[in-house]
Length: 381
Image 1 (tube, rainbow, N blue to C red):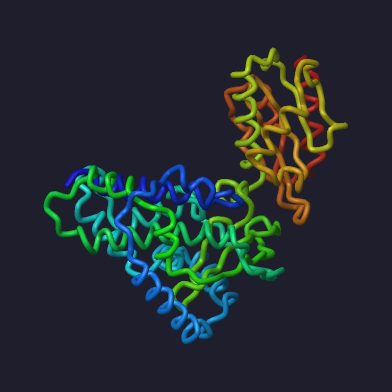
Image 2: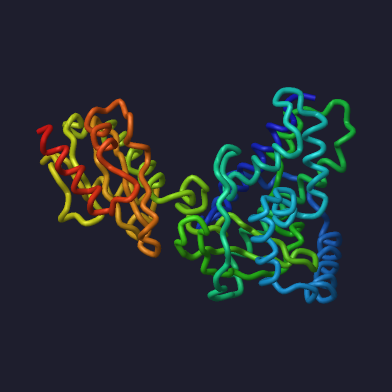
């Protein structure tokens, strides 16, 4: 048994890439599948569809999709990885996880770790601070479009296939990673969609609140009728693509820092002729930019930053850029007393930043901190 887990995780990575927030996926699905598969007969498919319809009529009234969303958020806030995982997956998915644990000879991961890996998109990495969110309001609920429904059927069809594959091959002593890869190469999109167990569903828009910062924003999720019970597609539940990782939920200053420094690296690699050794200030209020080099293209810089953190315009911030590194101070407009700095200016190896860090205290206002940065840079010019 060789690297079974890596094959399954790679298998699932394809699904995650195809069913992300706002991604046009069903058109891309043909690129990663072929029409060669062990097809389910028309009779079997028809029977399964009828079974799903009967289950839908009998069981779906037991819980509204709104209740399911609240239940999911409660589980997320409690960091109940197993429950949030199972609420996003078809029945018997734990058989796949148990199979992975049993035959994984290289990574030596247990079930808990595998489940966390699957959910990094909403929980972040293991060392990230968990930030609770709460639903302030469900704004609207609309039936999924045909395209959205097809995407979710494709994803669930993949997961259902994984369960069947393990049920049928889990005891095969000759099973290895190449066997999984061969089976994957023969998958057919139409068959996966037919076997998904998804009959219909809704796209739900919510107003969420980050309980650490008090910032509110919109999150979206898909709630699907799977064999008479609700299942969640939670990829976008915590907000837009730039708000769904915990590194960004932790605080605006850190998020802006990540986005701006990534933009700086990209601009440097594109051979932008900028004297990064100059210390200058870029602000949310462009009129307060200070000592910015003439060759610095602010619009291009901000365009890049918004690709990594599209909520940057929803707060006030300034960044001191020295030696090609951005040091950020920000506060949330909804909660202005929550001023954040990232990274810590004190004792930084960059002299100007270290001097600023010694002068700034926690009780200073946003404007007071900005003025200290301007004065310090002016004295170093």
